[in-house]
Length: 70
Image (cartoon, rainbow, N blue to C red; front, top):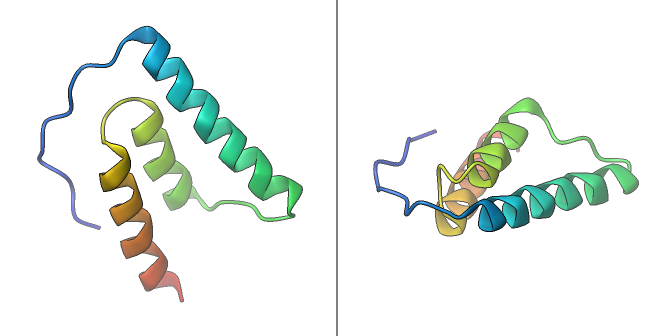
């Protein structure tokens, strides 16, 4: 997986809370469907939640990763 070098704008505490909640909900939804996200997927999602990467980079990384596990 390639690492992003693009700078990410600083996020407010409220924006970080929104991201964390969104990631927790996504993982919770997967678990309700009896799917457990693997460690690599969780790491990408947590990087987004922590404001390290933007949504477009998150989607790109998840797409790239999903191609390696099929």
